[in-house]
Image (cartoon, rainbow, N blue to C red; front, side, top):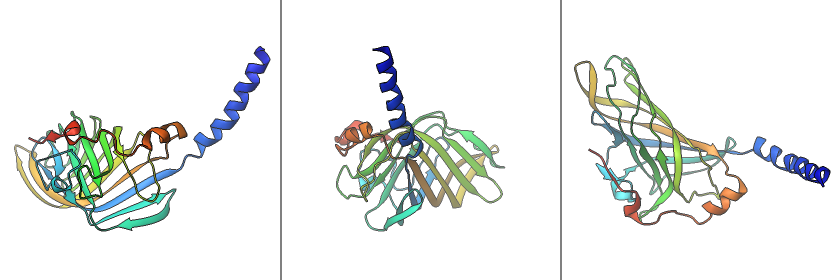
Length: 222
């Protein structure tokens, strides 16, 4: 009996290990994102509130392109939006430097004018990295999503947790005091990347949007 159980365990390893090693990578690249900073939060420049999947409270993008293992799948240019809030970003040095967020946040991509219109909704963990180059006036933020709140990606795609989020922004208009940025507006591009989820996770994600009520995830930027 024990020998039989070991054989079954060995077969299971042979079946599952190759799948884990060859997991596909999903990438979503977007352009035309407008950002704002108020001294403590980085967010999309369209509205001071959001998080409920409402495109009217999100920033309209120019392009949203999709890739699987580096292979181009297609680009969307109409009815595409991003809703961003990275909380607890303090004391960005005017001369340039790196800070880390102390609060959570959200990063949502929307494709539908209805509410909720999420194609991907991420809850962001604290510790989101923000790099500022005082010479070239560029912002680069990257962070690891703590969970996937909802997704309904096009091209038959599904993305698994954790998901990496990054963006860079230039063309900045900024304010400062006492050697730190107190505010800015900027525009730029970004990318979301992650692996195709395991089959068991796909069953859960197959239900489409999760937590459909808009009030379940609403946040107000201060």
